[in-house]
Image (cartoon, rainbow, N blue to C red; front, side, top):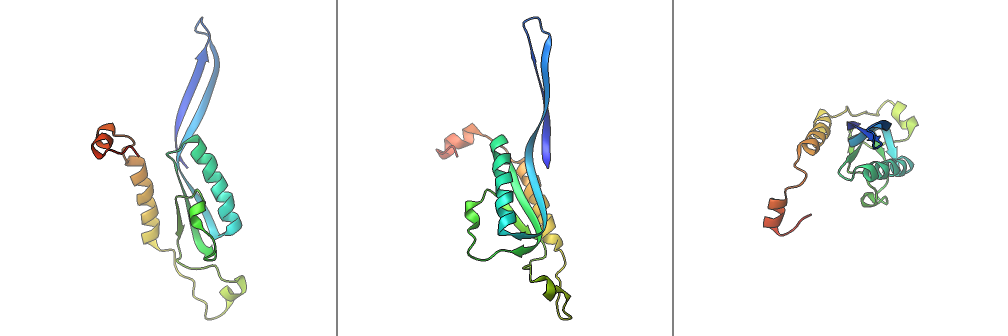
Length: 140
């Protein structure tokens, strides 16, 4: 997780500290999986929902080696910003992986680089430029 720390203190009228809290405000989370199935996706989406409740500008990524989802899964309904399948391969039955002809793809470095760039781009993008928004005539 990439986050920033914030310390907040409250004091009474005599400037005596009453409570001090240290908080981490998340900006990016990357959940790493060997494979991603529907149950794991739903769990990750719930985590992403919690993250985005704390910081709506945060991004939530999943990096998985293999994919174990079917076409019937509607990815748009989940709060995940992007899913990277690093081997570009489906998760076949475990027994098939031990057969002589099975080929396990490598983890593709270009996908790891894209994930890294996605994080860097998110962290460095300008959040709010009211003048540019007024020029477009749209705020969002």
